[in-house]
Length: 240
Image (cartoon, rainbow, N blue to C red; front, side, top):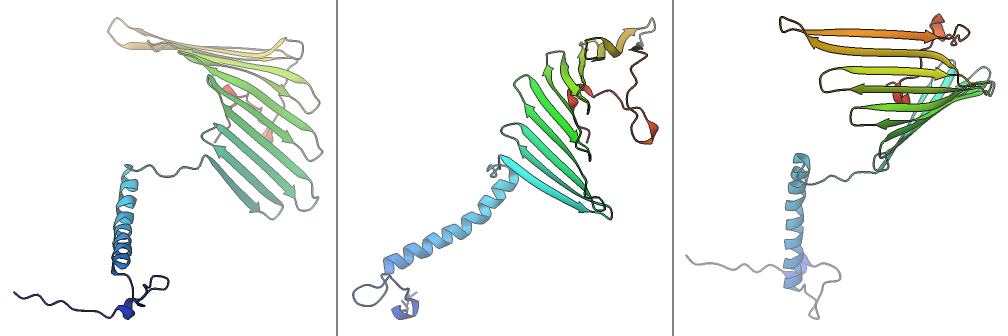
């Protein structure tokens, strides 16, 4: 079979800045550029497929920030959340402004991951400017965790908050919470133990024992709907 070589006009494929002394295009440059473009077009879908399969690590942003705004009939609420996965920090600021009076209520939450657990700090400032706060640290162990913190009321009174939880390999566990007053006295305490044992028939028996103590003069503030507020949760972890 006889091959026929077709000659294409050089001027029809001319690109600015790549002309030689004769006024035409240098064929080597044109072929190199065309080959590079083909490789780029072929590689992009391949890389996208590998990234989807998890074979190529996708770019991760160390810090993420998100702001939400709600404009209701009575108030405007703005919440900003900043998460830094690499540093192990979480910051959340929320502000609610009443449209009629212009008064604001602001809350903040800061969490920090540590080598042994995490720390937490929360605060709330009411429309009259009074602030109450809560901060503490959670420490993890091989068989459980402990928490110790301080709660400060709007009037400046401070209360100690502590908790612990542990579990063994046999299914036995225990948990306790304590609230102490400004002078170190115990205002509220709760202890829970769970034990498991085998019966004569080979079954498993589980027993729960819960004991509570409370100072008669200690009366927690009632929340919305007349419900008593629960003691601070273990580790100060915010509810989701």
